[in-house]
Length: 236
Ligand code: CDP
Image (cartoon, rainbow, N blue to C red; front, top):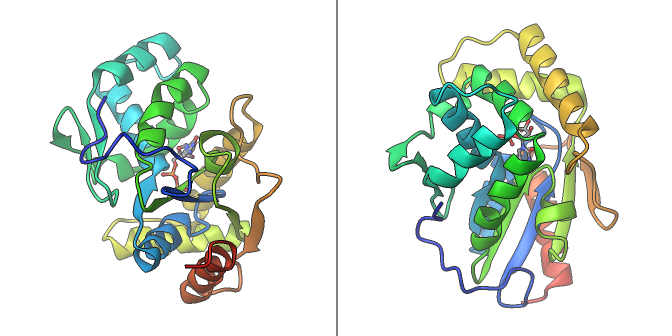
């Protein structure tokens, strides 16, 4: 596995590599917010969900059973999964898959394979090696609890489930896909429940995370709050 374009010398969590960790359930707005915060701070953006999605797609393409833990972990370690520094490009074996990993089928498969301990273990290094100076914003489910426990700032971004389902439906429709609110809500609830209740790295807020409920907040407001929290902690 390689992390394309990433300097592997930086030490995560040290002052020359700041980490802003944004965790939370599906549809809370993590990736939109994380991407914007990264631009404001001049940092890279690490979409850890894209790695789990790529792992799931690699398993589906290889016709592996979705609960074949060792088979999927082996496939991940052989596949060259690569994320660009802004996470816009995701590649498996040099083939661009950034659109292919966004289907509902891959979302469900990602949530299933990500509950397997060997799969999580196989993706840890890739995430940590993506931490390069001056810093990164990384989003996912266990960024603040497992991947970067010494992050400079940890945020748990949440929102009401009905609002999250609405946002995800609007997002899908906005990209030209057919999406039904009730289906999206069902799929999201299923995934969240699996992510919260799994034994390894369950979705939860780190003890030292700030909890942000974005139900009634706009993107600008959430981005402003996080950038401000970061600057208060790390004055420039
Ligand atoms: O964007 P959305 O919140 O729908 O999902 P995502 O962040 O792309 O993640 C897809 C799935 O990967 C999640 O439902 C989780 O099961 C899994 N995931 C994880 O287990 N740990 C992470 N750090 C990121 C994603």
